[in-house]
Structure formats: structure tokens, C-alpha cells
Length: 299
Image (cartoon, rainbow, N blue to C red; front, side):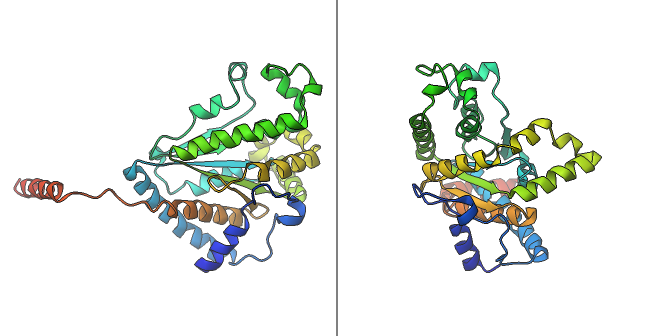
């Protein structure tokens, strides 16, 4: 995959801010225009992961930025596999993975950002959100009755959850992420775009393989019935919350290896824009190091 071609391909995955999109029309789930074979892609992925490890080391040494990777997708899109493969070469001490399920009663007693704030990476760290604060404009959008559990002022019934309510949430999310970005958090948001047919195939595979039975719950199958509702929720949310400082990338997810390669490329691309370098050492500090070296060699 040529570097310039890859850069152009990844750029095409960015969701334009404020522009109406159709996931079915504007983005593919299985790109037949792949710029590389699977064998070459997997080799390139390993090279990319080694490069990411080097940049992670610089991120820690630089101690000015943190990186937050947000993964959103329909069930069975491969989020867990992405996390497993993409961070396999990273130093686990500097990586923080947080998976968010349905909020607990304690979490519902706080605003919907609260539990996500607690999981944010510190400077020098990489954080990965497996699902995120975006569930509050996706799952709750498809099942608005869940909003009532938040006990919000002025929201007494479903009739109070209007179109304006959701747009205010988009604005809240944009303000939240703007604040993070202005304080050194590099936000990388990835939507794994899976086809309905491929989800069905993966669900059946989980049923037929005893080792994968635990991965599929009756809830997953029930949510599949709301496929079209989720697609509409994503189509509205993605352009409403994509911006220069925190763009959304729509990654084809029907081929797992290709999705992993794209995501490694996206993370590398965002890292490189930081122009990270190891901290410089002054002449005085260098002289001290040479004195220490002499002492060690004299032992």
C-alpha cells in the first residue's frame, strides 16, 4: 500500500461535519478497491504496530498529550478483536481499555459523561473506549424510554424527548470533546461499518462454535431487529459530532484484517500530526550523564 494512496484512502473515511450522509450510499462495509492483499496487509500491520509502539514511547516521554480512541459499532463488528490486535505491540502499562455497558443506578445518578471522565487517559497514556458516551445518542435514541431513567429536569415522559433534545446532546458532546482537545487529549473516533448480512453470519458462527457461545446474548439478537433505527441514529450522529479536532472515521468492517489495518493507519496518522519527539537534553545534563558513565565503567 503506497503511503500517499493510503493517506488519501484514510482521508476519504472521514465524516464531513454537518453534511447529511447515508451509510448505505456513501460508505462501504467491504471495500472491493482494497489497495493491498490480505497477506501483504497483515505484514504491513505488524510493521505499523511496531511504529505505533515507538510513538507510544514518545507520547509517554513527551508527557503533554494523551490519546483517546473511541470505538462504536453494531454488535459483532469486531471491537474486541480490534483492541486485541491493535494494542498487541504496545506497552500495556500505558494503555487503558474501558468497556461501557448499561449504566448502573449509581452511574445514572450522575450526568452521562461522569463515568467516561473517570476513564480518560492521563498525559502520556492511550485510552480506548469500547463503546462510549455516544451510547447516549444511539441506544437511548433507539430506546428513548431509557432516558427517563436519568431523571432529568423537564423530562417527565417520552413526549418531552424531542428532536431538539437530541441536538442539544450533540452540542453537549461537542463541547465536552472540545474541552478535552484544548487540554491535550487527541480524540480518534472510529465507527466500524458492518453489513447486516455479515452480522448475521457472525451471530450464526457464535452459535455454532461452542467456544464462542458466550459472545452472543439474546439481547444482541433482539437489538438486531432495530437495525434500521440504529443506522438512522448513526447517520444523524456522525456528521453532527464530527469536527477537525475530533473527526469520525467510518471503517469498512466486513473484513476484519482490513479493518484492523485501517485503524492502525488512522491512529498512526493522528499520532504523526503531533510531531512528537523525545525530550531534548541540555549540554549540562549531557555532561552529567557522561560523568555517570565514567563512574559505571570504573566499577
